[in-house]
Length: 228
Length: 248
Image (cartoon, rainbow over all chains, first blue to last red):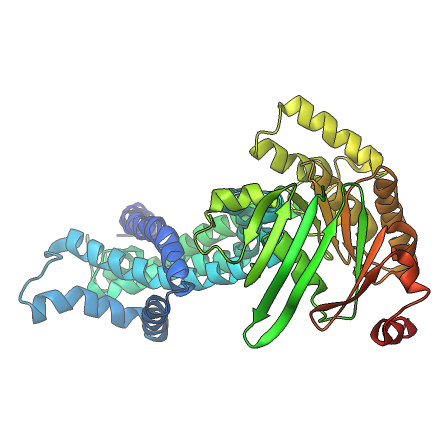
């Protein structure tokens, strides 16, 4: 099979893999962005036992490799409780991956949010208070946008890291784009011993992270109308 | 009847007594300046009036209505009750605290609109009048970041006035400003005094306090060490005020 015959086969296979990558990326953001906010409120709670517990969890999750967390979350229920809750197959691996990624990224996001919330000067809240506004009016109409502006640069960093971190799910054989590229090393669909599909997976990552960079630049520009 | 009565107000932070037995009253239309060195309790007193802090004991009475009673543990501290109490006062901060994401106009109209103090057109009309009265007609659509400190502070004054507070408080309104910008802010405050706005001004500008006030309170170490007509600045009775004034 020459290159022109291989190419469409490889592209199709990589695209299916990348779709799984995108799915994991999207689900992770969907879960981790709100969960991170809850965790950040927990870590800032005035109720000391709660904030202590939350901070320990954040410390553990941020202090250990995501790959380790993936392995433990995937294998622990089956091996320890004899209850493989994730089920076998690609769907089970995806759910386990999503749980690990959401937990991991929520902890990182929570620290970014905390910095963003605490970075808005207290005087902004007080100005809202003396104008007779309610706590929720102060949060939504005054603090929120200033917080968003502050967290956009660190969030864009984390989110671009997430694009590439999704490849860690390869460790539990989730069929994402690198898994798909690697398959052509050993041989699949009549193609074997070629390395270029693996290189080509990089193109997918580059294109997607490039797109995200443009998106974040756009958002930063949009929020550039005020200084905070 | 006095518009404001403060009785036996006490406040500690931990072991530090910041306010010890503060008593004073203010008539409608009067301007009171509070002077004293840093840490003497001036700002804490203003913050207690505005319910940003709560005194440990004592009373604050506005227009005959007790808005704070340290002897009544059951008093309403619900958010709603607090918000209503705060609206008796306006507060202009040392650091302006304008909302950076809103234009000058929106800074002023935000609270009146959220509190439904009139129709949008009425609120906008009042806001534009206020902006003109502080001399910033050409900055209506600018953002705070585009203004000088003096201009920002004038917007902050307009923002506080938009809610028609009974008493307008200033917490060192010119301390964060370059000397050449203090004049324009003091002029606005003076204009308000001429219109008999009831005001309490914490300030280090002695000449200004002398010229604009009906009454001066000198605070030292949490107590009112001397109070009286502005003339006490020329002719202090207490040793402490004399010592304080010579430091200027």
